[in-house]
Image: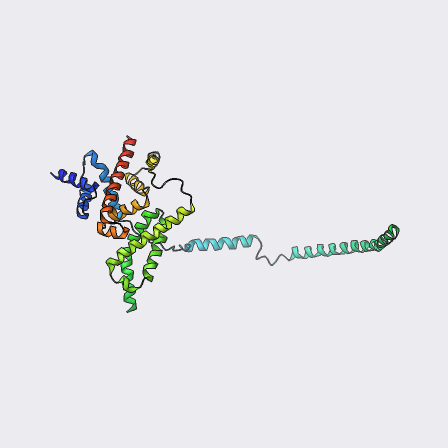
Length: 142
Length: 172
C-alpha cells in the first residue's frame, strides 16, 4: 500500500511533477525506512545527500587566538637565553687580562708595520725615476 | 534608530548567508571562492539600501539571483582565461568510472555526480533539491518559463540516477 504510493511519487518525481510537499514526503520516507527494495536504494542516496547538503552553513572564521606561550614555557625560555648569554661571556666584564694582552700584541704589530712601511718608503723614492721613462720614450718615438 | 535598522539587516543576513554560501559553493565548487562570493554578495546587498531590503521575501529572491549571476560571471571569466579542453555538454561519465576508486563514501558520489554537471544544471539541483524553492520561484530566479524548469529538472534527475546506477554496477 505504502510502497505503491511511493512508487507513483517516484515516477512523478522523475518527471519533475512532484510538489515540494511530496518531495519532502519522499525524503522523510527514505530517511526512515530500512530494508528498501534494491532499485530504490539509489534514491535513498540522493535524498539523504540533499538533506545533508541543506544543513551546510557558512564557515565561521575561527578567530586565530594566538595561544600565548604558557607561563612555564616563558620562564624556561628566558632562563635558557640567560644561560647562553652567560656562556658566551656576555656578562664577563672581568676579562681584562685578555684585553691587555690583545692591546700589547696590537702595539707590537703596529711598531713592526711602521718599520716595514718606512723601508718601503725608502724604495719608493727611487721609483720616482720611472716617471722619466714615459717622457723619454715619447721623445724617442717622435 | 539607525542601530535597529542595522540589526535587522544583520539578522536577515544570518539566514541568507548560509543559503548564498551553499549556492555559491555548488557553482564555484571551491570553498574559498564560495566564501569570497558570499562576502561580495552581502556587501552588494548592504549597499542596495534599506528600501529594497525591507521586504525579506523579495530580498531573498533578489540575493539568490544576485549570487547566481555573480558566480556565473566568475565562471565565465575563468573559462575565458583557460582554453576549454572539452565541450561543456560533454558527459564525462567514463571519468567517473575511472575515479570511482577514489570515492569512498556513497554520499560523496552523489555530490561528485552533481558537481560534474554543467553549471546551469547544478544550480537547478541546488535550488530545487537542496534549497527547496517552488518552481515558480526558480523560474523567476533563472529567468526561464516554469514548464522549462520542470522539463530540465526531470531530465537532470533521470540523468543523475542513471549515472549513479552505472557507477554502482561498475563496482559489482
